Each structure stands twice: as C-alpha cells, then as structure tokens.
Image 1: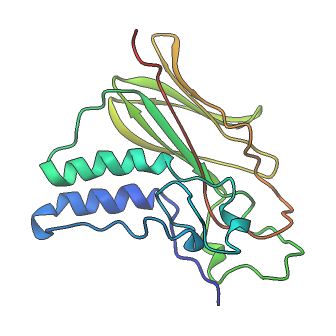
Image 2: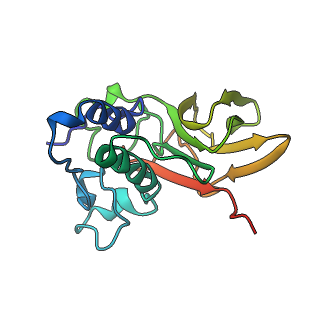
Length: 205
C-alpha cells in the first residue's frame, strides 16, 4: 500500500519553529529520515538509493533542505536563531500536477489529493530585499522581505518552471533558475517526491 502524508505549506520549517519554541521540553531532535530514499523524505544527498526507488529519486536531490536544517538546528541548540551571513533562496515543488493522470500501472498513493500545485520557497536574507518568484512569463509575484528567514509560495500549472531572484538596491544578489525542472501535466509515471533547488549569493571578494 502506498500513501503520503501532508508535507506542503512549509511543514519542515514550521515543525522546526514549533520545536524551537518549546526547546526546554526536549533533550534531542531526530530528523527522520536522513537517507531513506525509498520514502521520498530523505535529507542527505542520494548515495545508493534502494533498488527500484530510482524512478522517483533520480534528479530529485534534497540537499537544499540541509541549509535550512543547519539554521534551525543551531537555533535549537543555542536558543537563538543565527544571523544570516549569506543571502540564499531554496525552492521546491513536485514534478507534476497533484491530480494529473498517468498510464502508470501503480496508482496514485492514498491521500495524494492533500498536496497543492505550488512552488514553495524560503529566502534567507542578510538585509531587507525584494524577492520575485516566477513559474512562467505570465505568472510571477514580487514580495518585500525583511532580513532573516521568510517563507513564500506561488501557484504552478502544467508547463511551468521555477525561478527566484533576490534583489537589493536595484542589484540582483541571488538568482535561482533550475532549467532541468518542468512541472508536468501528463506524467509517464506518478511521482510525489519533491524537486529541491537552492542558490546563494556569490562570496564577497
């Protein structure tokens, strides 16, 4: 039996924030699962996925989430969120529409309807910035974000891509444009894993 749990709506960030707010009640936090590639919620870079899980893990590296993990783990250990020293943007989405149909002999997993057709983003800004998320030439949204960590999202439709830019004082400081990602409407097989990408500002010379 295949099934999925809700993981949209920046759940990873919100779970960490909830734990940090109650950190005096916990001695340890365990991130599950670190390398269970077959379950699609792995954190570590893919090294030797379980046999036959390549169908939903190939090209679906999640290492961008590790940068979030480092930020929140530091806050849990110290009791205060660390200063953002480098501008970053992390974005993710599923590879096809939630209600897409496919000739795949394996049907959609139980609860697949709970997912949203969206690109999720987290911006880590050293200073207030203007952030634009874009899924096509006609679908984009601009946000003014403060210094720190900001959670953003934008809807996506079949044929869409993902692009994010961080602009400050009229200059682009971070651009993320993973050209290998396209949101499908008619996939050959079902895949409810997440495609994750990230980009950071160039180091100061």
